[in-house]
Length: 300
Image (cartoon, rainbow, N blue to C red; front, side, top):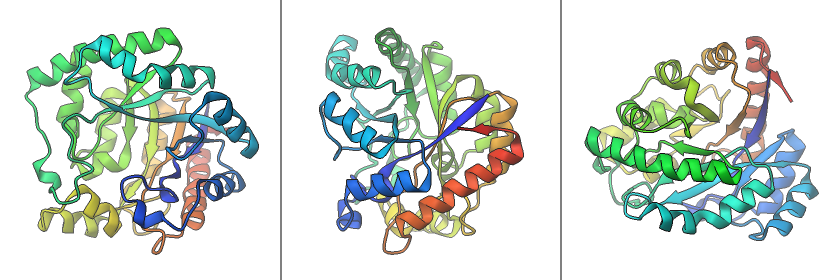
């Protein structure tokens, strides 16, 4: 059993808050990620759009495609319409042997609204989330039949945000739908990352590692700030940051216990003026290698 270590380039190229990272290029980010030792990167918007161009781009830096974001609209669209909307990405990811598509419902999210407090996120009933899960299972099965696993990303500001939402989504869906497990979003949502992993580890197909600076999170809650306010203020960081509060050793121990053999992806959006991307991304990589070794997780 082994895991692979990847990274999202969001520390260098933040699509939600582009002003934060305007002085960085995708090419520089790719060079940094490869130099640090990451085996893969998640797809970014500034990478080549065509499959042949993207393959050559990844090969140039010696990395694999280890997933990528997909903004879903299934809540307001028929399954067939959503299939058509994401078909190009599914076909591209299948051709490039990506482990999954990172799917998240965005038709009703507030995650990108800097003036809307995260406390106002859509909170649906159990029945509505379970019905959505059943519908999403159809899309996930179709995607798997095309050669790409669909992994659902619970996210701050979205309709599937906390542990209860995840329970409902998983209970309402078939095993065609897998779960992306994100440590930082779980802690931000006041969920216990270990408890979620214990309950739904058999559905976890993809993992995002990000840490949380608790004083910044406390400020977001006390001042009723938006998700993006929190990001800009530094609510997230990488594993290994002494300012973080998540016990990643306990999490890699659990991943070993459930025989996880997928990707662990560092995804920690920060202000690069305060957290230089290369330095922090290397800190995250080195820490993951260390704790995986202690847990008995082979990396490669």
